[in-house]
Image 1 (cartoon, rainbow, N blue to C red):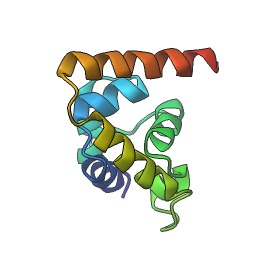
Image 2 (cartoon, one colour):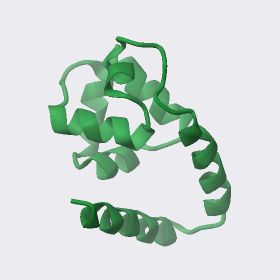
Image 3 (cartoon, helix red, strand yellow):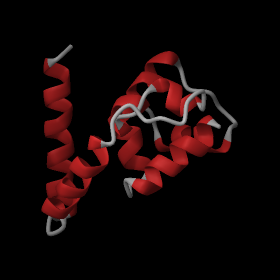
Length: 106
């Protein structure tokens, strides 16, 4: 169930393996392995995945069908529209800024 949920959310958000991997702090082959069920994420990575997709860990694990917050999808769609004309370099800069903001919260 976990791998299915990760893949479903990644495709729903139109994230690449690399985007999710950078956001949660692993390499893209780890995300692929989680999706294929050949590797299980650590608790920290599981928490980061839930934050990345703004869903509960319970939702990722399949113990509930309720997401914690549907606001994430609406927010993402607005952000996606705002980022449509950005170059790859611009997107990398946005990702670095997000990581900077997240690091300030630790």
